[in-house]
Image (cartoon, rainbow over all chains, first blue to last red; front, top):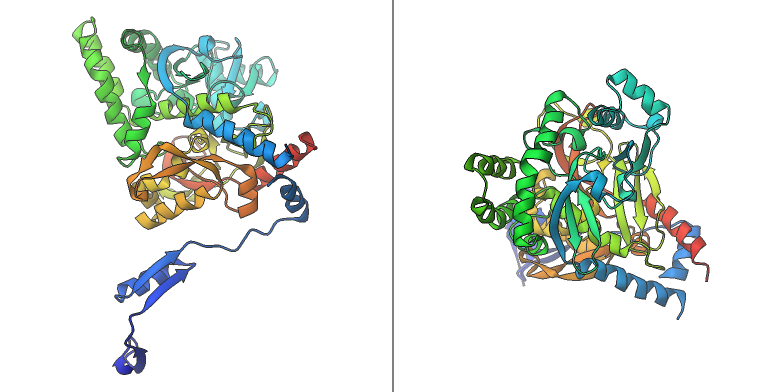
Length: 64
Length: 418
């Protein structure tokens, strides 16, 4: 079930009646934008794992 | 027990030096009587050790100020000649039982706040803020006849009364103040607003009851109440006392010191006592006190006050003090996220420090150099921005350079070769 409505650009778009629930990963400004439009969102703090030089990585394997 | 297990056990012991510490303000003494290894004709400074010829302008000026204040030379020119001759011993404050806030200039005659960890008996000494001169001699490395007179006034007129009051009440416990202020918006590096008030509430009734002329009492009250961030040296002293207990625990990868000298930045590690692991000092991001300042005016990190981060305060406690994070334009959720991020690199949580913004979850404590490297998450450190020419021009934060941890890891593996 879906209905047509105006989106922020003024054009017609289709969106599910089901409430939007968002998990935002990365820049929190996207989270802000979603919340400002009335949708529920959570901000996930995540970053790619560190890339270590082989020497450091090998040493760490012995210690952690 | 394999190496990994030995490290885990050592880190558990080290982090409990912080969690179980019982810091108490017990005395005020001249640095020459309470800073271990501070000899006559010796000057301490902040950050990793650096020779006079290689120092940044602020440290060089601080050294000259130290020589003039102690009367080892009469003119600036003579002071420089004396320092260049090598007749003045120079060392890093962190290599002793003290820390150097800002430039961290400490000589034998300045009066120091003495904090004792009642659990271990270890004592640390820190330099108190200089009343109307704020950073003044120790923090900003300045010298003038007025600053010298104020140091004398602190030592001979103000502190004997405070010392007397302190002795009569049997010391002043610092941990309850740290804990309560964390619930009132302080993180104990950049902000001590709540701690200052709680501290005053503890001290002032005894001060008013002291058997001294009213005028003298009121001078002490003015000094304590009107000095901004008066409690800062107590947070640093408590943290350093705990780190002294952890220093030298074999196999521990816990960080026990973080500090900069305006050029280099360094860390120390519990299981590698006496060694510094350095990288170029980082620049701070934050807010300047005036729009006339830019990054060009800012000196790379100088000061040892990050000892509070080693003890799970300051940047580790960002969630406790969103107002400090707002200096960088961050919001409450960013402050919470910062502390959650720091959890990834810490050994434990400190049950003494529940924080409202974390739904009363505990703050992380004990930076583990292994976890820093594994996650790529560098410790968040708060602090004051220094002008290259002296003086405080803002506040903000930075991250400890990853290079320090890499060097420490290599040294750790070289020492513990099992």
